[in-house]
Structure formats: structure tokens, C-alpha cells
Amino acid sequence: MIHTYNVVQNRLKPDDMDSGPDLDAVWIDLLDPTIQEVGPLGDHIGINIPDREDMEEIEISSRLYRENSAVFMTAILPAHSDGDEPEMAPVTFILFGNQLITVRYHDPRAFTTFPTQARRTAMHLPDADSILIGLLEAIIDRLADVLERAGRDIDAVSATIFRGSEGEHKDFQGVLKKIGRQGDLNSNIRDSLVTLERLASFLGSVTMDRESSSDLRKRVKTLSNDARSLTDHSGFLSQKITFMLDASLGMINIQQNATIKIFSVVAVIFLPPTLIASIYGMNFAHMPELSWTFGYPAAIGLMIGAAILPYVYFKYRGWL
Image (cartoon, rainbow, N blue to C red; front, side, top):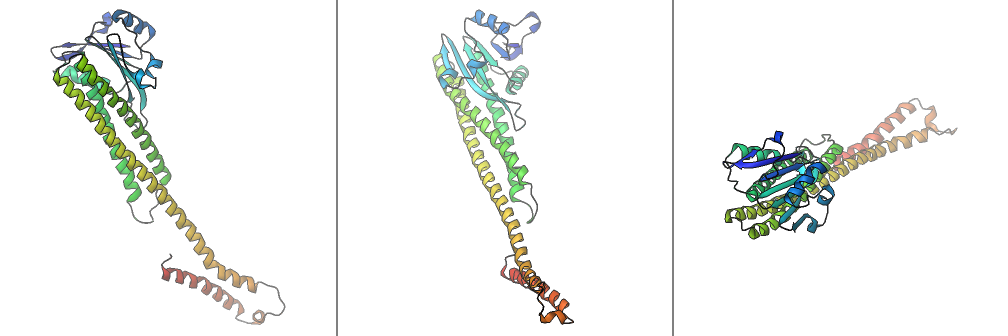
């Protein structure tokens, strides 16, 4: 699918697609494009549009490069990030003359919010460079929102672990699952921010070569600083997640020790009565208590006393 946009009175206006895509538009957005869509566009502008395999190359040199007069920049961006399992996929930004071409195979929210905002608000979008920077700023803002929500969720998990009355039963299996999901989310966002930080550094040199305005160069520098700050914040959240994981495992260990202690105390309490019952359960012919009238209640009382005395002693020493 191809979406094209042009700037009309400082507003980003989507083109009418009934008459076909405008291949000369200032911004051409390719969403899950087919060969039939990419071929005519590549032939028209004279560059090779990368496909999914090209975009998924791990090497940094394959993500940030120049080809003839076109600049190719690829970053890993999340989509459907309202949940704990966002869809992570590469998005390629191509600057070619006064055109911006984006190639993506998923739908990050910034690609919906930014065109809507740019259409409603008279933003200063004189060229493709300013559109790209505005789009990247929207992406950074979205990642900041995701990290903020993740921080609140992590605080909620922390409250579940450390708050509550003593002896309260807590579902630590569920807590560990929540911690794992938050760890995966934070790791994905951190990976995305690292690619955006590298992209911003590369874009800084591109704006110098393209002799962009000083305002755009300052915005690119701010963009790089914001990505770096969010990366640091993501690192802080990662440390907090690790701490909560260790705390949860410690709490589980404490609960297990308490359970084992209860079984140990019960075994010690019932050991003397068991010994007494074993003695009087022997079938010897000559046992003086066998013919005693109060032998049975005396044995029962002796067993009860032998059970109570260890319990009282444990309570006195604070072991229970």
C-alpha cells in the first residue's frame, strides 16, 4: 500500500489515491509494499528500494548508507506497543532530493499520529528533511510514552512484592511472569532506541552535507540527546527489573523456608509422643503399667505433655 503526502500551506496533506499515487510527492509512505508497487517507484526516482530482507540486515553498515544521491537509514521500531509484547520490525527512511520515502512492513503508531497532527496543525514543513525530523520526533515521543507506562507497571509489580500484611499469600508465579514481560518490553524498546540513536548521529552528518538549516541541525542534535536520555532511562528500568526479579526469588525462598520450618517443628513436636507410644506399644509380658488402672490416661497425658513442652520452648526462643 502506498500513501503519498504533499505540503500545502505548511500542512501535510494526504493525496487522493483514486487517481493513483503521486510519485513526485514530498513524502511517500510504503506500507507492506508489493513488487508491483515498488518497481514503478524505483524506476521513477532511479534508486533501489530495499525489501524486507535488506532491511533486516544486522550490520550497521547495511542500515545506514548512501547510494548515489540517496541516503538510506533503517531503525527497529515497535508497533502495537500498548501491550507487553510489541511487534518489532525495521523501518527504512530514504532521503532523495526533496523526497522522503519510508518503507515498513508493520504499523508503528507514530505513522498515524504524525500525519494527523501535521494535517491539523500548521507545522513548519518546508521540505523532506523537516518531515523526516518531525516523524522521528513523534517516534521518540511514542517510545517515551511506552517507557513511562512500563515504569508505572514496574512500580505496580514492586508494590505487589513489597507491600501487604505479613503472612499474606502472594502469587509469585504470576509476579515472575509480569516481571518477565516487562523485561522483554524494556529490552525491545532499548534495542529500538539504540538504533534510533545511531540513526540520529548519522542524520546529523547528512544534514550538514545537505546544508540544512541550523534549526533542523539543532533538532537533530536534540533528537539524538533525547534518544540517549531514554536509553539511560531504559537502563535504569532494566536495573529495577533485575532487582525485582532477585527480590521475588528471595521472597519465594523465604516462603519455602517457612514451609520447611513448619514441617520441621511439627516433626520435632510429635517425636516425643511417638517415642512414648512406641514404648507402650511393645508386647512384653512384664510391663508394670499394663495392669495399672490409670496407665492409659497417664500415657495419653504424658504424650500430650511431651508435645506441648517443645512447642512452648520454641515459642519462648522465638523460633515460631
